[in-house]
Length: 238
Length: 319
Image (tube, rainbow over all chains, first blue to last red; front, side):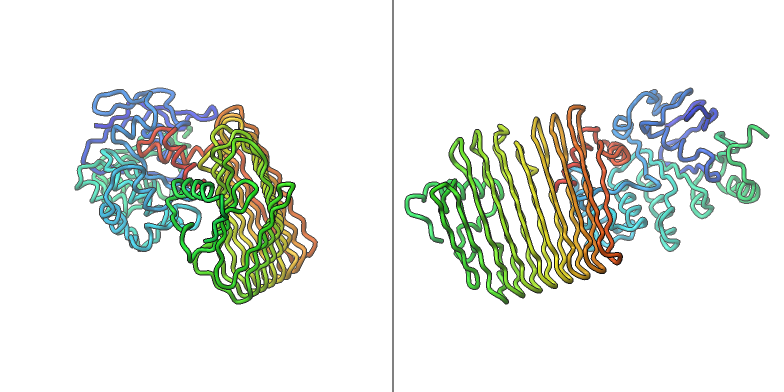
């Protein structure tokens, strides 16, 4: 189990995350939902342990081990990974070698991962992971990379951003694929279609967990109340 | 292949080193045009139909090589230019003159094998004229001694005539640089295009100087000059990219990326854009700094250490 206990995080003197606690069991799909700017991605970065994202208070546990002070690599090697909202570009690196990443992976596995994200292997294997890929193509390559990593806990930060609306079904299919493989998926989104496919949701408002529970109920509340509310880190002041 | 009598051993040695470094066995093939220079002597020559090679060795040590390619010649396999130095110390001075006709298609593969020297000054000056509607590719790869005693100066002046395309790749990424000074000065006439790329990996106390100049003198001419330097340890690198938009609708882009690792490197870049015609368009990009943090963290989130991630990124940049 991955657990966040009373996590607080500040940047440039202002508190962005104000005491968040969450639990993620393996093999389940979770959603962190909320409007733009409420701190959803920050929670994802704190779990991954990115360099500028160390909690000012609180601890993160993985299967009972305190991983709060571990670096990104150590967390990744324990099975946590991140699908970036806007994945970085790499000059001179082909899709094939990016997906392989110096590991002993069969070509057929790479092809299968590309097919799962609706990319034709014959067309994409030799292309470069650089500026010439469109945002959607780059996102799909990153998704294929996550499939090959077989993480225990995958944080998907806005998996649908930059991807055409026709590919939403593919995103849902890939989320289900991870679940079938025994991975836990933590989807960060504000899109109803994605959130409804998750079992349990955390609704974030102003850096806090405002509501949690069954995704259908949370999404319904979010749609009715939050979508047009405009709360972006103002909750506490009100 | 004409191997000069008495130089068979030097020829063999150079070819062997080349084959080991590249796994390419084409230097011995009779169908491949080849020029092999060892020290101050042309030791092997092979020409193909439509191509004429003349060489002259002067008493002062200068080696002059003239390469002429007739109009309408298509050379289906790359022409190999192999220059090497097998003594421990000395100087190698080479002067190449290329005259490439109209409607020619040719690819040159140049390799500089300077792997067994303690102290060497290798100076190569080239003048190249490319006729109309031709397609020319020039790839230059260097293999230097790991001791750092090699000083390479390569000066290239070119004129690319109407409708022709020229692409150049200069790579010194696999071995120590020592000291290197690369100058490419290119004039482009109407509708001519050029694409210049140089990639150099500096280690220890290497010194790297690159100067690339695009003179866009013809209407609708275009060029890209891109330099990538990875500077580590105590490397000093200075890159100058210049583009001159002297004609209507000329388009030029210059780009320099210098990636540093360590606190003792000293790198700089200087772009210069000069527009003499208000319909010309020039752009530039330049970056100097450590490896992009997001790129590093993207790979670290897949389980690579910071060093493994950096190596992966740099290998891509210098590939």
